Length: 568
Image (cartoon, rainbow, N blue to C red; front, side, top):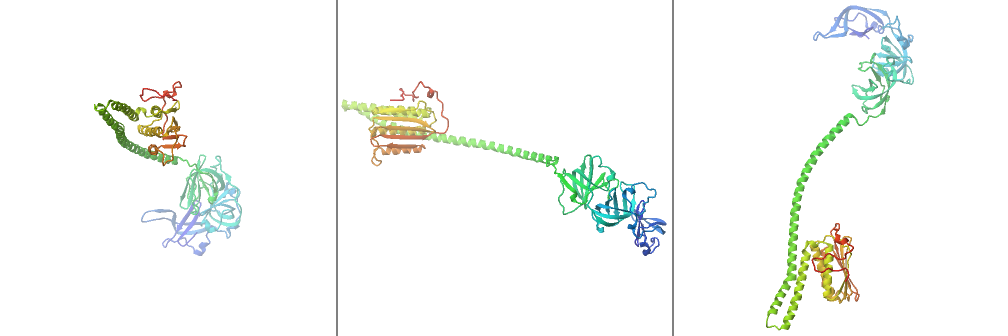
């Protein structure tokens, strides 16, 4: 090229620029004549002066002045450079004694890759690189076009390089099939400017300026794949992916513009040349370290939280234990006070009036004014009252003695009491009890409450039923104690007029307070049946060796002088 201030010359060693200014103009030649010098081989002789900055003392290599100077045309430029004979790319690689870097040469081939100011051609035998003086997009050529190219060959590399090339489109054709790169041919420089296909492991996918650079490894070799960065294609491949690339092989011995740090590069025309064969494994070393660190932090926080929670639970447990102990103490105290109150009331009710009556009968017995016959009557009353007081005291002692807090003890005592009470009234008592009565726990409150109801039922039989026989059944069914008192008396009249109705209501009220039930069934002339159902606390019956002795049908007695059989 040539202008009013500089002239660009292609030399066998590269491009230089001859500059000119008012004091040192370019070699004398009119601009019209200078235009015809483009692509001519010329020889310039003149006085050389380097171009440098006087202030910084910086020299600019490749730029200088020639003044005074003259130009001699050794070989004029052809009128039509594309009229030159076509030379095969393979011939340019052979030795030629007449070869000259300033000899304009014509070749033809197919564009297999287009880069800024650079094209890669393939003529079927070898590859060629074309360096143009203007951006490739300005030429309107694309990959797959068949072209003719004229330029100055630069020899000595793995493939010819045409400098200052001019191109002309002659057609279009599909690209040839790629050559498969393997571990044996991956470093062959003869593949330069050849369409190839390679499989590799992606190490990184980055963007540098207007280029997207993928660093890959195939076997022991690392290389880079380069393509133009397209902001519209935002998806990038994850490191660790296995990719198949189809692009042009560019050897380091003849690197593209800008150079490379890899033994070769794969130049991609577009993202379509990238095929993902396998996604990377999610479990990478970095993620493993991250997960391990996160787990360590989580475990540390969990350990601290558990320690604090454990300490808080211990403190709360101690506090709850104190509260439970205090509440249990209060409940025990309250229960003890209730039991004391009940015992005091029972003693007052059972013994108080009786003792007063005993005192009166005793005073009457000592009075000399009373006849002997009346005194004997008073003594008989005194004896009967004493026995009744002893029986009442026995009932109170049995109710409060924790030794008898079981269903077996209730069965034994009720059997003894019913037999004794009914015999005094001249009524036969038949006991129907299982041979083995399970010993479910039953506290004194429940025993006392159901005993009072049981006693009331027997009292109603004696006073109102006119029965001659009573059948008593007791058993534990499921988790409740069932007691049945059946007589053969006259039965109950309608509720409005039946004697002893207050006693029935009292029995039902007592069982309801204990959480149980009282059922009374009767038919006139066919007797009456009273059934008590008392729920037992959940748990397993306590084993008792006496209940499993098949040779004995007797029950444990509450410290009474006589035992009671199973049938009377």
